[in-house]
Structures are given as C-alpha cells and as structure tokens.
Length: 369
Image (cartoon, rainbow, N blue to C red; front, top):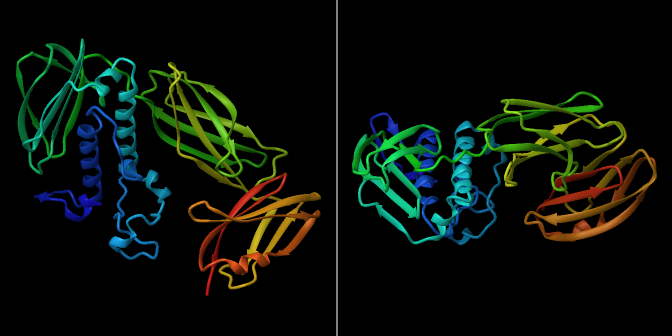
C-alpha cells in the first residue's frame, strides 16, 4: 500500500506501478525474513495487500477503522506478480525451517549494514552461513560485502552459484535487485505455477504445473464440498515432471460446486497447500435459493432435494460469529421456508449456510433498510 501511495521513481523506474511495487515487496521480504527472531506480517502481505489499515467496511478511510475487518481479495493469486511474491516469501520462510539453517534464525549472531541504499546482512552458526544483499535505491547501486567463508555460495532463490573470495567483494545491483546466498545448497521448495480444473460430466479433471520439484515426495489431491472440510481423494507421486493431471470420479456425489486443493509433501515430511480451485457444475436435484436478497423483514428459502432429508440452516456474520441455527425437514422436491428469525438481524451482510446429507452450500445475504 505504501509503495503504491508514496513510492519513489527515477526515469522509467517507478515504485508506484504495481509490478515494481510487488518486486520491492520481494526485496523487503529478503532482508526482513532472513533476520533472526519471530516476524509479523500484515494480512495478505505475501500477496501485496494494497488496502490501508484505516480502510472502513463502508469503503471510506478513517483512523477509527484500524481494527475493522478488511476486504479479502481472492483474485490476488491470479496476478503473476502477486503469485511470484507469494512464492518468494514462502521460500524464505521455508528456509527458516530447514534443519540445517534453522539454528541461524534463533541466534543473535548477525552482522549487518542498513545505513545506505545497498543493504546487507550476514548470519553464521558454526559452519553454516547466510548472506543477503539488496538495493533499496531507485537507481543502479554498487556496494560490497565480505562473505564469512571463501568458496562456492548458492543463490537460494535462483539456484545459480558465485565464488566467494573471503575478502570484500563488490556487487552492482539494479534498483530493487536482491540476492539471498547460502554456503550450502538448499533446494527451493516446489513452486506451483498453475492449478486448474474442469467438469467432465461424472468426473472432474484437475491439472497442475510445477517448478523446483527436487525435494518433493508427493501431491495429495484433496476435495471439499464446502471449501472448508477437505478429504484426500488421491495421492500422486512426484516424478520430476512439470505437469500433472488427475481425474476425480464424482458419480453419486450431488453438489453444486466442488473445491480442490493440493497438499504438496516434501520428502522430509514438510508440506504446504495450494490455492483452492472451484469447479461449478450443473446439478440435477439439489439447489438452494434465497429471496428476496437483499431482504427487509421476510427471508424466504427454497431447498430442492432428491430425497427426504433434514436441512440444517445457520446464519453467521462476516467475522464468522454464529447468530442463528435451526433444522427443518425437507421432502423430495422443492421445499419453501420462511426464516422469521432473520427479521431481528441488524442491517448488513451475512452468510447463510444450509447443509443436508447430500450437499452443503453457503450464500451471502443482505439485510436492508
């Protein structure tokens, strides 16, 4: 947010442009996340969150709204620059958990120089060393750093190598350029470059692309009908390929939408999750409709079911606090209900969730004037 609002510029290099602002966030993460000790990150900072902390729920800006709920922008991950920032920060955090390098981040053995635009830091514990450099200027800058040991060093985020002399070495960096060097090779965590899916009638086809699969063991493909409760439907062994696919048989499962994610498991047992992919299908027998929406006093709900069943209806506010819960019996066919209790809700937006034995669906509802 501050990059976009107050960023500096020189010639064609302008921090106020989104692409450059996101690259500067990579730079900041490289120098911030490689320092020892715990860290706090502003919500969705790993995706370049660009709402001010003073953003109000009604869209205005006010210092009284600092603790108000902020918008959730799920579309951020579809932006290539935001996606890249996410994976850079994820890789840096993964390095902090690496068994070899973890001791560096719980020690006080750090030397650094943050006085100029060319900033650097060094961490050392025994024979394990790390060095980070970055250019915070908006023009090309030259600076120097003395590596703790001579020999081959590895650029953690690119996989390239340099030869350290053990004496002061000069680096000329472009504006915003940065490097994280380690004296021992550490495989960068797998990067998910794409994850998509489509419906093929009685099955859903999922396909994904990856980079940096060197230390990966397998992919657990997980499915959910409500985007919250996931179960593993397949285990796909990592074979070193860059592209994978799996066909999930959904015959006999009635749902208006299916949600999928990948659990990417390293050979050492560490894992991380992918973004969630939603596949919407045309469902025969099984839908929920709310009307009117927005509503004033009366809220009508129509539930169509293929069987005699019981539907659990709940209404929560946008923070997830449960405000109303009730159960109704439904018959095969269309069922109409009036939710009289909704008349007591204050004006605002809510989430109604209806769950039967066959499906679970959530709908945003608005209580108007």
